[in-house]
Length: 125
Image 1 (cartoon, rainbow, N blue to C red):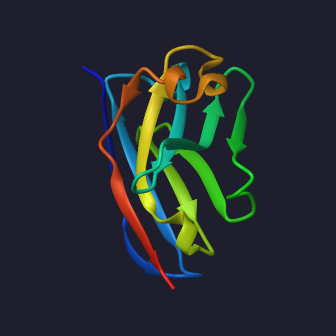
Image 2: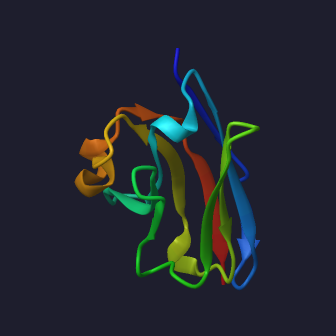
């Protein structure tokens, strides 16, 4: 059984930092594409970052480049999203997800096969 458990969200002041964690079980991280998505109230779910194991590429969306870092701990089967210099527009529910295919990142939410429950990130001004 595949499970993705996201945690680490909370309330933080603008300019502050949070680190989100996603514990993965039932799969080997190296064999899957792992991604972070977020969804603000009343808006669609958008991709934040994605790791493509085929070529070792870590993708970050332009809105978070220079502020967020996506990494994985294969030994602990955990992936992380380090978020620095948080802004009010980063407020959203953050989800981790996994895709079976090496090109899963290209297809956004439709490319993901497994989803965890989200963790709320709220950034105050």
